[in-house]
Every structure is written in C-alpha cells, then in structure tokens.
Image 1 (tube, rainbow, N blue to C red):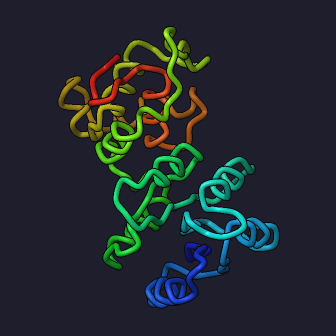
Image 2 (image 1 turned 180 degrees about the vertical axis):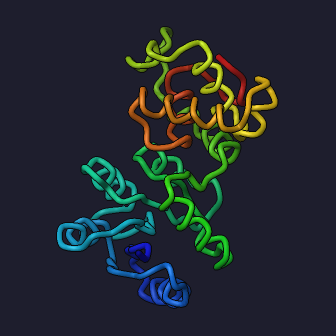
Amino acid sequence: MAIRVMLVDDQALLRTGFRMVLAAQPDMEVVAEAGDGAEAIENLRSTAVDVVLMDVRMPRLDGVEATRRICAQPDAPKVLILTTFDLDEYAFSGLKAGASGFMLKDVPPGELLAAIRSVHSGDAVVAPSTTRRLLDRFSPMLPSSTAEPQHKDIAKLTEREREVMLLVAQGLSNGEIAGRLVLSEATVKTHVGRILTKLGLRDRVQVVVLAYETGQVRAGGGAG
C-alpha cells in the first residue's frame, strides 16, 4: 500500500512542488493538502494519512500547535516539521510537540523521500546528534529548578536500559552504542524499543528531548 501523505503549507507553490516530487514515486500518494494547521486537523477527520509534512509558520493555527494536537490523537500519523532555517526554534518546539523529525524546505528531493519512508517505517529522521545540537542551543527554554525533574517512569528502566538511554541522548547511533557497550546492534535495538515502550515515547528523538528535560543530559551533551 502506498504511503499516504498530507502536505500542510500556506504557500500553494511549495505544496505543488512537493506534490510533483511525491507523485512520481510508486510507493507514495498525496491524499490531502492544507493551507494551515486548522485545515490539516479538519482533513484528518475524513482522510486516512500516514505522514504529514508540516510547515510551521502559518496563519490561524501554526504547525507546532497543529503537531501537538495531531500527535495527541490515537493512531496519529507521523509528522515531519518543515523549516526554513536549520536549528530554527520552531523545529525545537515541533520535536517537543511530538514530531518525528524536521527537514529544511530546500532539502534535496531524494532526502525528502527517504525521510518520508523512514518515518513511515517507525524511525525518526533527525539524527540524535542534530537533535542534541538543537537542544543545546535552546536549552534555556527548558524547565529549570534546583531539584532535577524526573519522568515518573524512568525508575522502570533497568540499569542497562538507562545506560542505553543516556547514549541515545548523547547522539550515538545503535552501532556506536553497540561498540561502546560491547553488545550486538540487534540487542541495542531491543533495548531502545523497551525504553520507548516503558516511557511512552514515539521515537528516539523524544528520548533525547526527555533526557534534557529531566536533567539526565546537560547542554553540551554530557550526562547529568
């Protein structure tokens, strides 16, 4: 079955360009378009969508709030935030809102297509190291207190799972984590899956965000 994509951008010309790229793919289909976040949410009530390409700066309802509302729904489609500038604060907000990644609007077509396929298969398309740079830059926006905040389910992690979580948060790939901990990549992938399940997270991007918010990792990438 083709990957069902919705394009959300207030610039019709951009939507046309993306639609032409996607229409040339045998495994993708643009099933809906919207000019703002409110229209996107309305479309989802009547149209089944797998992946949403979401602009951020739009009238009525911006992409960040739309992403938050979409990702809060059961069986929500995956959301890819589209930004104009790398390390945009909107990308940071979008990741916190539940997006599975962010892409630049001028991304080469091949990378965009690969990102859509990756997200559809359940992966995040922002490298954890890129997410870490994003969080390092905008860490002042994170909650701060003298006592480190704690996610109520972190205590459920085994010692090994916590080790893996910290390495994910520091930007290491599964292969790099396997080498560091002398494990197979398959074992690391299993640990990551269990971490996501126990913490109720969608993907490893959210692991990075949570690690920062709870003080597990400090700005600069070091463990807390």
